[in-house]
Length: 94
Image 1: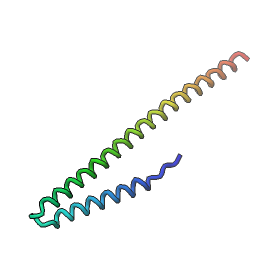
Image 2: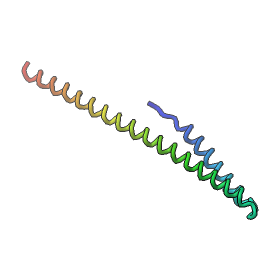
Image 3: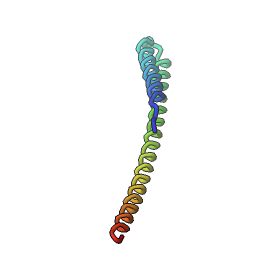
């Protein structure tokens, strides 16, 4: 099974450029315009929280998938081992 990481790279690029733009914008805003600066900072924090939530959700999904694959692998291995042992036992008594 192949997984494409292009969406993750694109999202990462967009987020990085957005945060970079916000940072440059904050630096260029005159000091007396604190309200705008605060709104940009709050927006950047909201974006960071949003991205953090998405990453946590994806990490949880990945962990769940990994645990499922491990359980299936264990089951398949145990079944295979049982079948091999049965075949070996059958061969002993022929």
